[in-house]
Length: 440
View 1 (cartoon, rainbow, N blue to C red):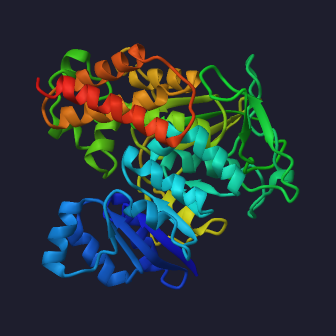
View 2: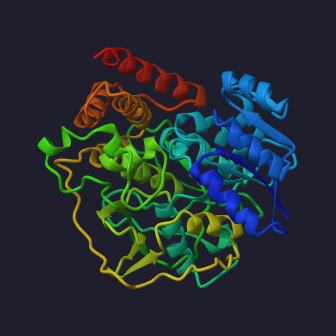
């Protein structure tokens, strides 16, 4: 029986996790739930699963909840999710809080030596250098819940011919960098070897805070000779449209995705393709490589591809449902027998090259990834502010990428020193953009 905490239990990821746990009551026990404002759904979840800890971040909503349902919330405020992430009897923490608000709870879970199932992109986009180093030091597994990163993970697992967890001595030199850069290694799990002395290091790219950084232990066996990972992007609702057409996109239009059911913020990110940019930076930390590319695949059936040095590629396919990557992580290293899970090969699969002249944010994200330092933090803060302004009808759709580009281009890069530093920088840029454009 695995004891599970869900941070962001009332969101789409949290609800999907609970659906899987409902199917498998003998394998998982909910010991903690945390949400932001949706106290009605949180109360319903609490009655069903009877967790020992219930957190609600919004103080106003917590007061309304107590008036309506009586006292069922254990802790309120910004630190509720941080407390939940460190519960002493928890084994696995589902980190599904949207945005930068989720980073501190991810850090708390890793610092408390919990297995982390990660759906929050921003934790690694902003704090990847610090969090992945801490995961290595603490011997913590970070397993991806995003469909694209799960697909890459599963492709790499398939290359090992081994269903068991592999340790450091089994796994080196997975992702070979054939450019002029130093070689990088595929990784997202941070299990130590018994001796703890076999850590790998590489020279830090421009903008990183250290001359050398510790690399978490690779997941897969040596000899795989993987040269590149390729993420797929649906293209959102507007790929193929001109800039003139994009100027007229409304928040209502941008909040609907053709394949996925997601929250408003991530759906808008998908429409601008910023979602793919954030995933590229996240993949850089999960798999410890800069050899990351993406392609447009509107059907969302192929979720990720690995390419070997001989040009051979392996892809991971499943229907566009978050059940599959979440189940893979929850049951790892085993598999769940998901009802009606067969993929029906009843439609064509298409692929297109990205259009980075119209959708500039993925290219900007790749530039920030390579530069490192605080630039990914500025990128994320500017995007969160711009998306909020767009959803509030303060700016138009194309203004999002202009605002983000201007922020990154005007920022002075500096070394990453602490989570507190990154949060302060993020807060500064978010408020700067919101205050400047919020009145227009």
